[in-house]
Length: 149
View: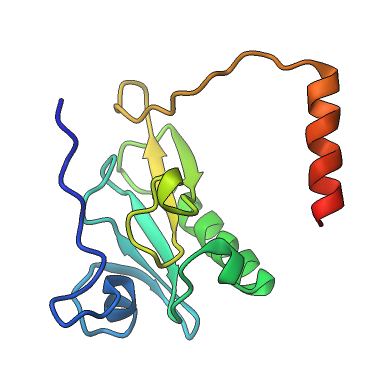
């Protein structure tokens, strides 16, 4: 199966597409709006009910998002996940997914959090080398991360 075409990251005028949506200059189906965040129905959903939570101000990646705003983004996603479960949409589970950077699959350089309703056979797969690592390797990785904090 061919990969779907990438969505444009900018409007025809060169504006970040998520900034245009957050400001009301581009259309979207909103499920949440406040002073700091909006949440919309994804234009190209993994499953029906797939939502995106995005900050109104432009933050290209997670590192540029203030920690308090990141916490608020996850709080909104948590509330929306519960709301999706209360609908009649097919939803046996939820994935919260944040792709931080192009190598992680981020297509639009404006940080956003996916709320994805899940059910068996929905077609969404994360593939990786899931083999168990040695305790020594885990300790080495942990030491590197602790040192970088």
